[in-house]
Image 1: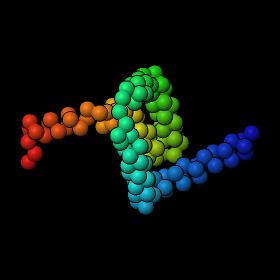
Image 2: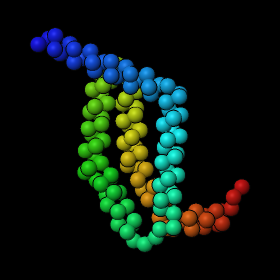
Image 3: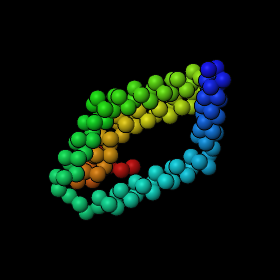
Length: 134
């Protein structure tokens, strides 16, 4: 039994070491950032020129999921995984990624909804006109 557990722990340690090495690589982080920018640009192009209330209903539902019980369950599961990984490996990298993801899940969805809504441009323009750009 101990040999089986030893193999499982060894495989887990190897996986975490590879993940830690990947997350500490500047090349991998730059690739992920560029991929994220490309996906965001495609999403902007896909929603450009579309209007109506269909996006509003979907956006409200997704925001409710992210900030409701589903979002809490995702964050709690991630935190349990992050803390367990930190305890077993002694590295807090995974925990930092999970906490960052939790913050992005809770605060990022409303920001994205404001960006893609039809009134976001007018709000930004109104703010710039009233307060001026320096």
